[in-house]
Image (tube, each protein chain N blue to C red):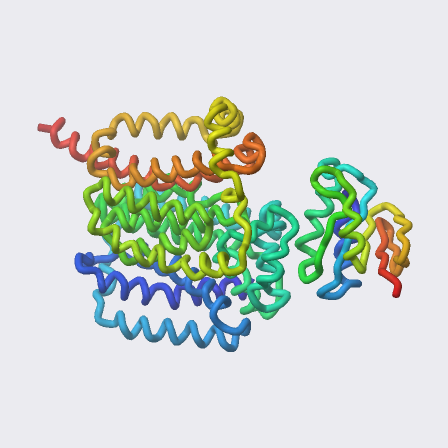
Length: 99
Length: 428
């Protein structure tokens, strides 16, 4: 996934310990791309809580989105109510929950 | 790389006097505990102690380093009366060749292990992930372990390796994974030193010891940098070799450290106890108590924090029965994965056939231990809550490496003894 590592490192730099980060990617299947980015995000984002937006059975996890105060989006532009784009890069963007 | 090297130096400074002291306390202590054996034992013991310090002390080098130096000083003072290692006999040219081979292979391993940060998936989602998460909060983060949402975090796995990485981060006062592979080189070296020392005492031949050491480099230098396989193989193999020689105190401590590295170490304690009973050394079973005492605090803490264990998740018996009803599923899964090097297994099988009588009698402890441990691994597959083929595919090759070094060592030493015994007979 080109640019994914740089995106995650940007996300780390722009979040703080304790933030709850949901990972958004253009893939809707766990085993067809989603798990790759999600699992690779865990190690660089230690100190934050990293949550998937789908589970291992490809079911959407709306509860995880409700918990998140930050969304890291790789090569997609999710339109999420209650979130605003706070940073945009070449391979993704960071959205933060607005009060 | 300076903090990594300082960590190894501290481990040696603490471990060698402690190993000397424990050898000195042995009733049947060898008066000539050799340098390589003592250094290998000391390095393993020292790494175990260094890894324990973050669990006991504040996460600051200003607390941890002085505490380790005090331990090193006290154990050096306590072991001052013990006999120093005997002078090594002069090596032959062939022995030097095998030493050079082993050294070149180890240098290659060191380059491989440190060329980049550990890239393994299990490092990024388990061993290294936990270490890094703990270092963020400068303590064992029980909340993190209790709420881990990804299954591969395995919160029930023991923490010796993550805490070893944290020990280095504490010395550095910051997290860097660039050279963490040095830890694995240290474990491989320690195991090879123990193997060399044990072989030297047993065969009384520099050439044989050098050959066995060189032959076992590929087993000690595991390819999975960042994972617990290398440390576990080092602790477990050294423990079994020492217990086999009657060095119960150090062997049991290293067995406890193996159980603090991987859950498979807990099964190995039971396997070793059964091995001792079958080898008519039932009295020694009680002397394995350090092996139980060392991982016990972790087991209690794990239970108090209700950390989930996937293999023991509900319905174990139903899963075992189900898998036993379809044994071909497991056999097909095992048949589909790599066994490693076919030539090695053929050579090992021929060796086993040649010295089968010795293995069944003189080496009963080790052989029974390895067989029981292997049976435990098969039992774990039968109880797995995961897809059997998936579980076997991603673990079989690593599990086999747990048992291969000890088996190869004992086959090689038995073959050398068999050769030595048959040669004078042929000459006469």
